[in-house]
Image (cartoon, rainbow, N blue to C red):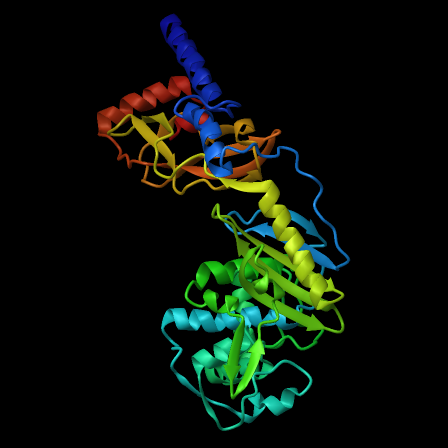
Length: 423
């Protein structure tokens, strides 16, 4: 009995050490040591050997109802004002109309060369005081032309024509818009029409519109380039894209959409990239003029590109940790992240990041499947978590035979709590 108690005490002490090592580590041990060693080199490469600012000034503010500046790759919001306050999106609604159409094209259920016969409900004369493509009843028009009429010319008539073509009724098409809104996580959005003409039940938020812009860029790579086209001529009438920033040579803006209603003002969702591969999305709602909505979006994008950067400290698939496994044909599991870690962070602060990890348990029990989530990597700046990524099993481990499992159960009995001993 004395020997048993002594053995149990030793094993419990060993288990405590293992669990302590698996707690969050302020400075990650090898193989993470190279992250900080390479940080300065990566920073110099990104900045062209020029010192980057480390103090981020306050974000700009505007005479507008609400706004959001979002990093495309991480979804992190850099700055915001009233991001979840209900707004009327006006023609930003057409972003979802075009998204639904784009998903049909992507699925192969629709083709840009398909013909659409214009019904009376889509007649341009019904929209005399609003944006239109100038389509006529009974005419046959290609889907591709109608899509450009929606995105570039913001044609209400083109929206109705496509809704009727795909769903038979506008109401049916709107129901699909709302289904996609839920799937995309637009929690404060509801659509009641396909074009954005004023309706109390056609509402959204600056944040949801930025999320929708992100989805368009991510999910519709074939259709998204249309948002950067500056003009489109149909029926002998040339119309220009109302997104003024497409002509601004100081930014690389390639979309997305404008909107205007007397009840809310001028809206604009914009996306731009820079030479480092960053992409930002800005959403500004309720401006006083076309010029101010362009100026405010430009100010947000400029602020984001100037003071923030994307940083990739860890790569997918690279083994970061190994941990003990019991009751398996192998006694060690390798841990890695499943996708590259992409972090949005203030410029010039790579050397200040701290990378740590937390594991689900001190000792893992077979069977383990490849890809099982066994813990998490955390990245901090100023003790604030700015990014997380699951740690997954690189190798699958099957259960070992009866006697191997029996021995491991004995060891687990002495070294673990009762819950683990029951495993």
